[in-house]
Amino acid sequence: MKTSVYPSEYFDPASTLGCGQVFRFAASPEGTLVFSGARACLLRRDERGTSVTAEEGDADYFFRYFDLARDYGAVRARICALGIPRLSRAAAFGRGIRILNQEPFETAVSFILSQNNNIPRIRATLFRLCEALGEKRVFRGCEYYAFPSPQKMAERDEAFYASIGCGYRARYLTAVSKYAERGEDLSGLATARLRERLLSLPGVGRKVADCILLFAYHRTDAFPVDTWVEKAYRELGGRVRGREKIAAELENRFQDLSGYIQQYLFYYEREGGN
Image (spheres, rainbow, N blue to C red):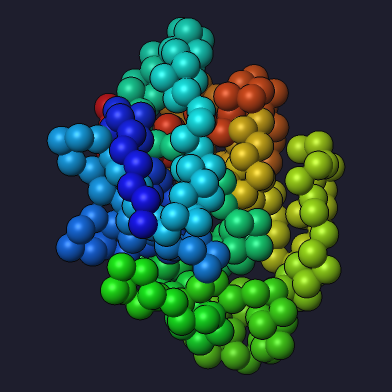
């Protein structure tokens, strides 16, 4: 095992995991277990800072996963320099958030399931999916299940996915899995072109595509818009109607800060910042 410790001011487990970007984690007596693909790590915050404990061979993976090479203090300074009080307050309130670099297939499945859904139900469905189709693993004495491969998921039909609680979203999962089986690397595409490819997938609309862009490909020029962000947009004086148009306006306005601002605003609005 390898444990690395980082300052907590810009790396808070509670806000990073609680801002709607990831769903596979679980409390443990030692801290919080985080699962990504077939890997697991332990997050813990104490007087030393925030520690990440992982298998020696997974340490670099989780360093990238938590985006630990990036200076979030500098990101926050750029946002505050915009001179918009609500954004400055949101960036202060959520300053412990880090935008994760997640596995694209797992992220796509997760956010397809997120549509018209709530976080506890999304998490429960993903854990059932992994238990049904994923390989059993052990980390620090805790059993967990890896996220299933596209090949494994493509073998199952809509009835199976409905049986584990996917609802109407069940009809999308086999098709998306078959697409992912090709193993096509989309990471080199420009954001607009990558969004087009994602929108061509069954069950992927603009908001889901933008979540995949931000949380799997770290395209911080994407600005996912949901109920909370739309509320914040109105409170900032925005007049455009329709979430796709709102997203386009905000991306044009904030450019590569869009994703960071989106996360800060989402967390600030949902957690009752003022």
